[in-house]
Image (cartoon, rainbow, N blue to C red; front, side):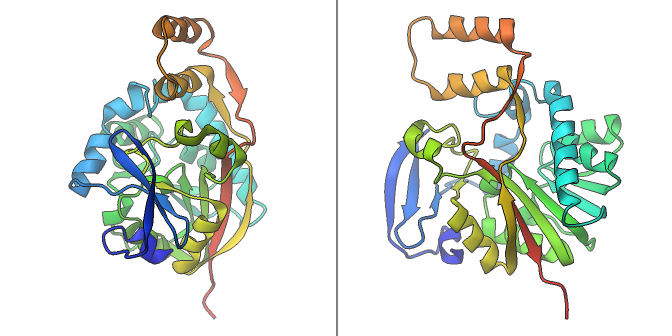
Length: 290
């Protein structure tokens, strides 16, 4: 798996599954990992993809991220309570924390919270409005002497432009015995397979990697983090956000824009539970020192 995540040096045979947004979705014939190859400056990639439009203009991002505040705080509370089965409250480092809503849910449950977010607007909101400690940057280039009891990668693992560098930092930033909590989409799920190229997670260049249970486990094992547990999260989503994703991924038809706009204005504030189809949580652990 490590060779396959080193996109520029992997020599294993690849197949092109399909092409989306002018990017070839590749699959390694040896390990089954799926990814795209980025042909741009990596730091520019981060600033371009996670500009304010990602959080406020829909499409493959959010129609208005701040409107999901309560949903996301509750999601953080859910994960903090889930973690209580494995670890008492300690220090948590949330990578890609956006405005810090999920992190706030951990703070409510007595965790000491730190965040990392590439978007300056989101980070500033979290610092001013929620009084959270959030730094601006990407995990690949992040440096710190701090060590954490828990690192959370909530819908983040597939976005890393240099996944080897990111995973190296995950291992380095963890205390011995520390945990990594991942939430990501299972591309081997029946729903993903039935959706094919129209699966909503196939949205390059924002998403760069697509994992199955096996390839995700391989990645963490290569970086000396052992699998502990997995499950389906209790996740809620606004209809407005769901409609934004559907609008981006469904073929065009006469009246489509009017129909979606009407549904969004009429029912957009409705909240529903995301069904246990393709989204999962995974827990990994760094071995304690002997």
